Image (tube, rainbow, N blue to C red):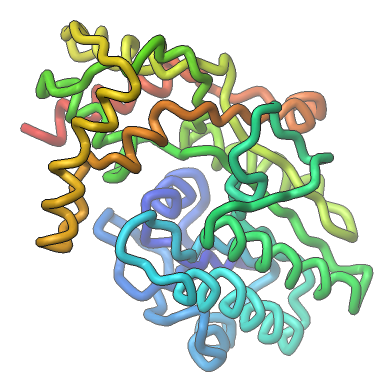
Length: 320
């Protein structure tokens, strides 16, 4: 028996490889992993039925973990999100049905809730306010329909917050790099909560829930505890780097300071780590609860602070 891991060559996929037996993994991805692996790699695209069939055929696949997604906040058009996150999910469901696979785990996102003042929980009505969040919610709807067609099917939907950890080259690494360089500043009081998810905890939480899957659709948020503010996150990182964040800038001034970077981005098309959008995002609260998961007995191996320190240790080794 094996698991089809779509998008398994990426950051989160590397940690599934660390946790699971490689001979139990078939990895369907556009690119080969850049980490050591002994799983079966199949080059392919979840938007193409034949590629999915190629990965499933003769491999005794019993379940699918779908990580493949369009998720970056730069350089991706509206329709591209839906091509992968919705239509790709439709293709997975269609081919899974052909091979009588009845278990599917889908990585969605807390982006389906949109930006809101209250703490999000799974009982809240999703109100996405970005193409990414809209496309992830569309993917969830596809899976709900798939289960409605055959109620004995099992679907697990995970809605993680911002995921960070070893091998991550995106937002959190950019933050660590800025603090390390001395360019980072606190934005106003920096007292807004930023829910984040350490990748090793997230992967273990997923497998904890896989073992409990029942017919139907189950939805779980994932965020680590304790929940930290932007100031607390940056201070933990600074301490781990043996640095200090010495500057505090009013929010309005911080946004103004991002304007020159916006101009460079527009002229060059480059995705710079600083922009007015990123600065505004930094100052926005994103508070999401994973109480449902924790109430069912999951205990993450690392706290938020321990996860941040582990990533900083990796960053220090990786930059040398």
